[in-house]
Length: 436
Image 1 (cartoon, rainbow, N blue to C red):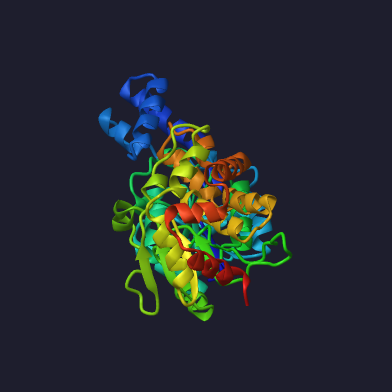
Image 2 (cartoon, rainbow, N blue to C red; image 1 turned 90 degrees about the vertical axis):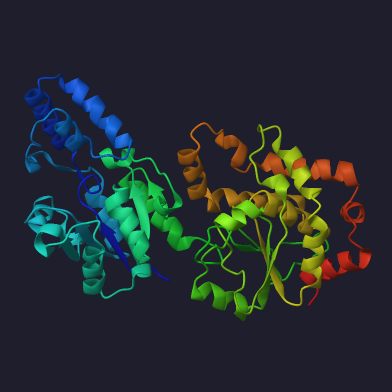
């Protein structure tokens, strides 16, 4: 569903509050008889533990929390330009925990002219994370939750309640709120930005993304690529994807409307159990889980990636996967978790079967780098010690895999013979893609 409204928090989202916090923490330090540097460091430590650093350090030192000095607030340098740019495409709203006079302060900052609706806690008598303040904003905007983004720096106040309502969410990691450590999937925002310009960049990508499903990041059709004999695989026959846990009505209608009713899930049982497919037991679809264990873990090194792809290709599940694809009456959507490694290997083999040019197979593989860039950012947050070079697609990964594949099996025919797929099934699979 098309996004119509963007709702922003104010503090540490549009307005830089660093100086305000410094003044507050300095007052706390002086009142508590300790050095300001100690208070600053302790506060940051507490914020990184998802705690309210200024309040807790004041309580620890047995001093009152100082009054907020709004006079030290400053607009982020890019805020006005970004709001002006976004206002040309969206309605802009504010949902914020603020003292009385929020609209007047936004006017003094020179940005109220880009804001169509202000919903602030002091005026409404209800504050985030209470869902009622979000309900008020959505009702006044006249939109459904899925037609809006909530953009803010606080996971607890901005992201979790908006996400629970069905809004799309973007966490902007600015200020102390940006120190939050994500602990569970319930806290995961739709996107993460590190600055206001990046907010605009992500929204531009979101509006122009090419994922076939609106609830996935990486669903693509194998149709349209040029075979060496001049043929092209047909659209809506075989669809590659990342996991689809919560398909929307639009996604379901798209798949049914194009007769794509067989779903092949290559994730392992533990992942399927923790994130069940939205198509399992869904009326009108046939769901299969053929686990490919070999691609469920990150390879040991960059050099090990092509070899790991060979292990995926040799998985005992591959015979069932390709046979099911061939024998399914309609179109097939197949997936792993990110639509990158296991899905990438199966796709490369299918395209080699149709004699698609090597450079086009590589280009198709590399699209995952663009489609999954938010997923890679999440990986960096959750696994700070992980070498991202291992999981981010490189042309050499799929090219070296195809070289190893031909060296091992001689040809795609040799591969299918090895895994026990008959010539009739192989031809049936190829014809599914390239024959009318």
